[in-house]
Image (tube, rainbow, N blue to C red; front, side, top):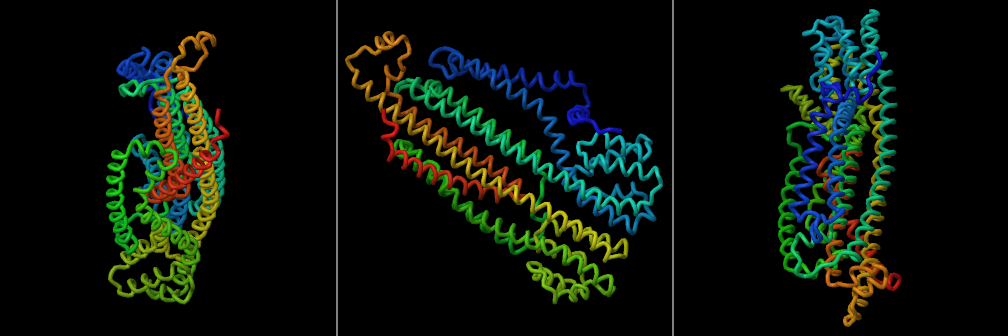
Length: 600
């Protein structure tokens, strides 16, 4: 039975045919967005001259907003299925390891389906197992047939192939232990191939993202030049009239913002989640210090934000006139104290990676020692204290002391995993303890765990290379975006000043006659140059906000690719904002010194 295409799986999970999906989901979204866009247009002055969406801009706004909503409605089921596939595949490596370990000692008393029913803590993968259970228990379907049905509709090719092989193995009467041992290597190879494919997809998405962002910047450049040369107004304009001058810039900004949001969703749907930190409720010295630093730095940042807000209000004209130089730095400065907890988290991430690298050696030595000595856990751990396990040494020493008290062995292991603070060590240690107790073969269990962890760390190294590449792309794209927008600002500033100077010299001249003489192609700013300064100021502020949106997008993508936390992402956002601010200051100063290049 061949696996269905992803779009058919999406429709099958919606449990409705295509016309019904279009009628119940896409059409209402399109209609609501269409009328909402029309209402916005008419609430801001309609299509009349001086309105926010005057003339063709109103039609373009309605068309653009409707098209984006329709695209989002159509793409959402596909992205949701892709997300489900990613969630399934990120658990497959650990899932098959646990099944192999459980099969060593429990298959004689339990069927493979009984083992499957134990896998309740694997997220989306557990939901797939639940579907098999429902087909068997409620619909009286045989296990092989239920496995094939779920495989046919599974969004993950890795899980689908595994279920097909499992169904064939059950029907052929192959011993489960042999099937599980063979699946360790088979699934590992498929998982590696799939992981590499996802990383290649990430590289493709990087190129697409850079291209679309460059196109969005080009639209912003055109909109900025149009704003200065073709949009006029007065000092007494209402907010709607001011916004109407910015309508093309706002439309270009909307497209740029849509590109950033779409990129975040596309990368998150493609990149498999790989948590670094363990998830438990225990307090460790790192977690206590982190919470303290987060509260303290958050309070300081809050005070600085309030101070910066009042400063901006009081000195609006002074600061905004030099916004291209100091705007991003002015935004980054109040949030800089948050770099302290972010740097703490980043340092802990590096230490966790070093602990993970030594864990396969530790668990293999632990299993071999336990198999050879058959001693109590504390004696087994004590026998390993003379071996150098790098960053794990201190945690192993504390584990041995807790086990020697003989109070609660399970709790001692929980403290050990919390002390290492590693998601890999936490989950695989539970698998090892469970498997060694059930099978009575700690050496074989440890070998299987060590091999699985080693393969996972190898994949992490490849992912780390891709994350470093993404970080370099983010830096380069951010600096180039800041530089290109500052060049645009310098150009429009020089044009505005030059045209304003020409217009001031034509006080006694009827500028409308110049327009007629030039065949109607004279610049509108020649007739009224009073709004040039305000237009340039608004352009500077808007592009700085768009740069911040780009910073948020690339930080989220890079953090997801690296497997970091939200705190780490916030730290990257602040760092990139400082980089963008310094690049903006440098390019603005250089362009100001070289202003003669743009003089007219």
